[in-house]
Length: 114
Image 1: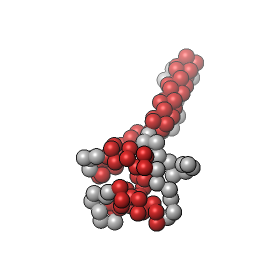
Image 2: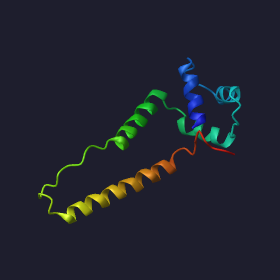
Image 3: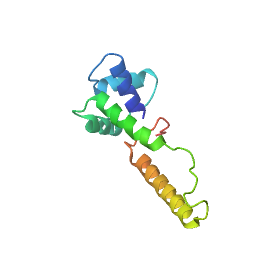
Image 4: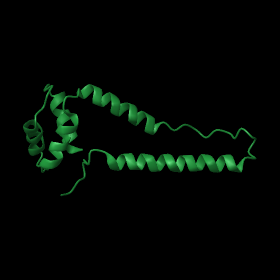
């Protein structure tokens, strides 16, 4: 995540196309180590993509993952134990999918210790 953050900081600072050296400089300024493999992976994944589009896609995914809502009253007046169990199973499956998506990620974390 630190590599993504440094890349975005460079773009916010007015650099429309930051390089690996730009990201290294930002991370070096705060004393962070640079894992070249992760830096290469980031640049491979974002090659030829517009930062604003990447942010928009990420925002959509975040909005989808965070939309919850309240608990609705059962349509059958509360007598449907099977329906409630099915909903619980769906929630459990959704949680597993979200956790798997988090694990897949780009492999970056602010708290990586190497």
